[in-house]
Length: 291
Image 1 (cartoon, rainbow, N blue to C red):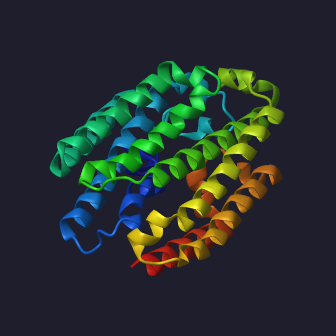
Image 2 (tube, one colour):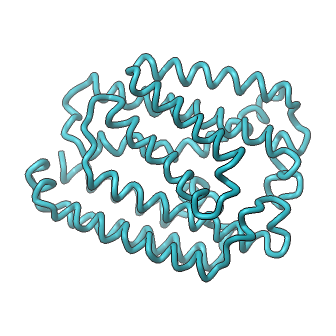
């Protein structure tokens, strides 16, 4: 096997999505407990491996459709750079190691990891063909990451964290569908049949609703009495501008169709320096204010 194409098959740039696993640790007062910190980072590593297993499985199943896609056709499997047999071997390896890391943390973490894999099987074979429910399935994948980084390691997740997580992941899901629809144009039904059920007016409405809920929800969270009591500070509200700017910047990239923005959130975050700087500043300021 060519090592370069094996790495591409694993899609390590997508691992940045697993930062959702760290959300509970960031907003919980648990940094002084080394075993929890260790468990959270092991869980994040487990999700990196399990998410790679999902990507490999999807590439195997969708190989014929991906050959018709303007960008996905260059992936290792549809381009013929790697064989299906090699991909199956990698799939089994990362799945076993990912689940094994989950069991090291807790049985709850392992169950959540397995649920994530099963959810993605259901998405690949059924849910991705059902309008709106397909986006909820994408969102649930992120919510399972949040649960793994909280329930899986013994942190009680706050209701505000779950609400904000749901809204921001639905926002990302609908922006992904809008970017795909615009990219494919009239040929969209060849690669993702559900795109025929969407139109840009509807998607823009869903994006506006979820973006607004994300901003309002996060703002209310920072001003919540429970939040201020838990973190002994009223200053989290000063991190809100980073969230607002980040969402606005993402919408700008989406509507300007810069480098197919919106289709791949991980690439957008890494490639756009404005988004990356905003995220880093938000993270630093949040950790500083809380801790």
